[in-house]
Image (cartoon, rainbow, N blue to C red):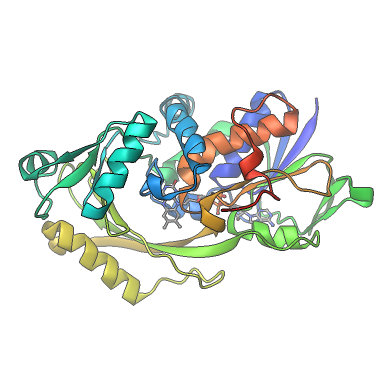
Length: 361
Ligand SMILES: Cc1cc2nc3c(=O)[nH]c(=O)nc-3n(C[C@H](O)[C@H](O)[C@H](O)COP(=O)(O)OP(=O)(O)OC[C@H]3O[C@@H](n4cnc5c(N)ncnc54)[C@H](O)[C@@H]3O)c2cc1C
């Protein structure tokens, strides 16, 4: 059986391992700490780019492919692990009036459902929302409970993939430009094919090869309210911030965009701003317990177009990272695409726009 290594156990690494294992390869996943504890845990799980019309064209096909794959993936994981990732078609309400026109045009071009709803319909869709005026309603957009998704993936892959936890990859052995081994504190691991899925830390790994980092960490803070089921049913997006209702009533308020290096501290300023945003849209949240406040580091890339493909100059080494604000929604397609490229299969999508050296708009 052919062997391959995956570096990093976030959603991108876990799904890449799943794809490569499903193709019959013997997969070893090396994780610096424990899988599924970083951005893929910290994120919101909205299965769409926020304001998708603002992104370069290359992001949309990855999102569309993943959106089709998610219901089956969630069901397979639920059946095989008893952890339900809670794929839920919540629908999404956009409150910013300036976004209605571009949103409608984008939806028409993509064949998606979207309509501008008036106050009566809005009351019916989301009775407790405090909003005067219309909203853009996108009924098909879904969410997934990402901490459960990564937990289910880890359970599903146990026994199928070899996990090397607490094993940071520190560099590569690639004499003559051909990958031979990964270097870890425990020694060298012989390996002729590997994919870097190290999220915000991928840039550091690339710099060990003398390549400039392509990825910068972008911190996002999140607040969790312990609300009751059905107080809010739709994802609400307004002014770049959002509120996501989970099935058990918990509501996530996010998020910030901060370039502060690898600092994962949370700040009182952000907590106050997120709370004010949440209470402004749903006044009942004022009296609801704030259960948790955390942050995560997104793998930031130019315009959110990920890097998926071979690392130039090192035969056998690939990269799949830089999904930035959209790593959960882009993960299934990103993982399938990198597996296609590693295995020499016809790719699900034209990979040109995601190549490491492709010009970024
Ligand atoms: C607040 C917030 C909200 C978000 N909301 C959404 C959303 O609603 N929808 C959406 O689609 N996306 C969202 N995102 C973005 C999404 O979470 C990320 O794009 C995605 O999780 C990135 O996945 P990843 O696997 O690349 O990175 P990570 O989950 O960070 O995983 C990378 C892994 O690599 C490991 N690693 C690092 N270096 C090494 C090494 N040298 N050796 C071995 N292992 C290593 C790390 O320990 C980590 O486990 C959000 C992110 C944040 C922070």
